[in-house]
Amino acid sequence: MTRNTTQRNPLQKAVQRLHEGFLQVGFFSLFVNLLMLAPPLYMLQVYDRVLTGRSEETLLLLTLLLGWMFLTMGILELVRSRIMVRLGTQFDRHLNQRLYGSVMQLSLQQPEQADSRPLSDLSTLRQFIAGNGTFAFFDAPWIPVYIGILFLFDAMLGWLALFAAASLFSLTLINEYSTRRWQSEASENQATASRTLNSQMQNAEVVQAMGMQDSLQARWFGAHAKSLQAQSKASDNAGLWSSASRTLRLLFQSLMLGLGAYLAINNQITAGMVIAGSIILGRALAPIDQMIGSWKGFVQARLAYHRLERLLAQAAPPKRRLTLPTLRGTLDVEKLILVPPGANAPALKGISFSIDAGETLAIIGSSAAGKSSLVRGILGVWPLANGSVRLDGAEIDQWNPDELGPKIGYLPQDVELFEGTVAENIARFTKTDAKKVIKAARIARVDEMIRALPQGYDTPIGPGGMALSGGQRQRIGLARAVFGVPSLVVLDEPNSNLDKPGEIALAKACHYLKRKGSTILMVSHRKNVLGLADKILVIEDGLQQLFGSRDAVLQHMAASTPLRPVPSPKSTQKQAARA
Image 1 (cartoon, helix red, strand yellow):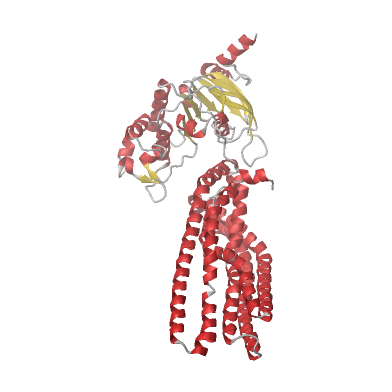
Image 2 (cartoon, rainbow, N blue to C red):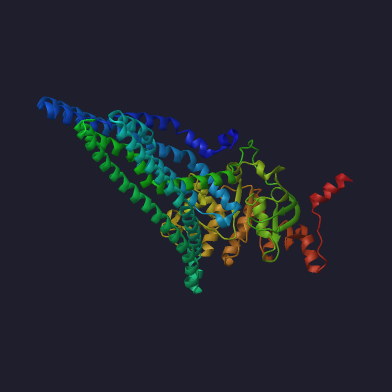
């Protein structure tokens, strides 16, 4: 990886922001590991000085000194633990907003792969940074220091410690290679099972009504069973090497006692060195043993890191653009070709039309003709394969989404309301302005219906809240779309769930928006909306069949003449200008 690429990597930047904190933890780890020598030195002095001299004063002084050292060590360990917790929180805060944006962007580009797993991966990384397993990496550099002290006692003790450390380190590598593949496979299968279950839960009514639960359960269980199998193999391997590590550590400590006793018998070391050597060896091997014990968490954190790295590289944030003047609503679409995310064939082929600010365009056609795909392309929800969409003469991607969004109202075909109150949903979860909320509800002619709810505008809806009918959701969705009287309002099948009063309310809302100068795009396969339109666009099989003024298009349709594009007044003027 080149240096420039590394600098652009947001995960690398997040880790670099933690360097100062890591240095502080390393500084405290220096004193913690120095104080870890207090117990063996205490034992050395007790055996070699106190017992031989039979001095109670010396024993008392050494014990008080040991207590002070342990107290200091406990405080230092608490401080470095709290630093790591705050570093984990800082890491999360640096990435969470960017990651949320990337998840939402991926949901648009690849809906079939969209889930909240990346946010769980961020949580996994935060917990690993703040966990105790991280301290093993700060304590590991002190292993040579402890082994060097044993060499000072006697070379044979040092070589035994070096062999023990090498043996446990080899087990760490074996544990890594034996569990890596199974951990990765378990993680991927679990993600597949989770996406499958989420999809089934979102369509629980269909599953129950059509008796599909058993077959869909079998599909979910297939992925879940593969995850369990891989996880079991990874856990079995990790458990084997972790058990071997603990056993070898205890064995080497006992061997250190035996070797020390042999050397003491031959007067090569003192009795205190025998006990101190065993304690020092245990301290030298502890970081390696801790690494093996926390290796599962390390592997999961590493997998999460690589997944986040791929996601953030795949879903780069949009560049901030120069703020453009307030949107008036002029729309120009030229030779638009659109391929839906995940598809290979284009859904729209060469769509071109223009409408002025304040005009109403009805987009009609049979089912699956490409009407909804067109509005998604116009709104920038789906990227264009070719062609252009211009709002007030500027390409759609030249507008900053947070500045353009409040000037656009969108009522999708499948209306989804979010967890919150009715007022919050209408206000698009911005700071709730009661006057604007009530005005939007009255424009959509839904004010009386909302007041009839148990808590009126404060009625909670969504998960854990009140369940609304399809018609109620659609009318509240219409109020959300007209909130703030946007310059461009896009209505995708706005009357699909409406009764007669609902359709009347929709027509009145459109008339009000038109008086206020809003540009309206209305998608429908019902011809009763044509009376609201200034212009009509007819699409069939992704191809533009007719476009022009309402009366001209209706005449063509009534006469059953061969379908051919009808030039709009605007395009006629352009042709005259060229001539």
